[in-house]
Image 1 (tube, rainbow, N blue to C red):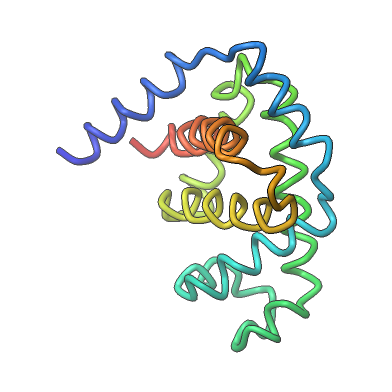
Image 2 (spheres, rainbow, N blue to C red; image 1 turned 30 degrees about the horizontal axis):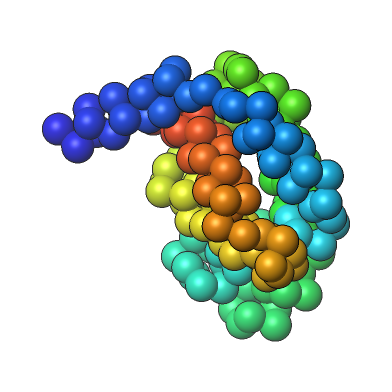
Length: 162
């Protein structure tokens, strides 16, 4: 029953989202200031450190046994950049995020078998890293818009799961 509810909620988020001109401008502004080479690795490292059970999906990355090992791991850094570069697709395709992430959702669901909750954990960590980097410029209104974007992205990435 939970899966059906989650699926309906996910579909509602994706299909019912509307972006105001202000939200589009805010998203573009935030994204324009994001340094993919810094923010991506920091966000992924935070997920792997704070939620160590997520490390099971990164067995080929080598040593992830300590925070220092995670932070110094070049594969974590590279994948963090990859993740953030993929987020650019959502920013560029606000009106078709579900279609944009259809293949990525299928890959993570059917081949990689990633727990779909990990997308939410990553979105939360990404928000924290951006808030830390941007300081007072990441005010509550900006954060609300950013989190709306990430909610739609998470819903799209989990759409093949249910």
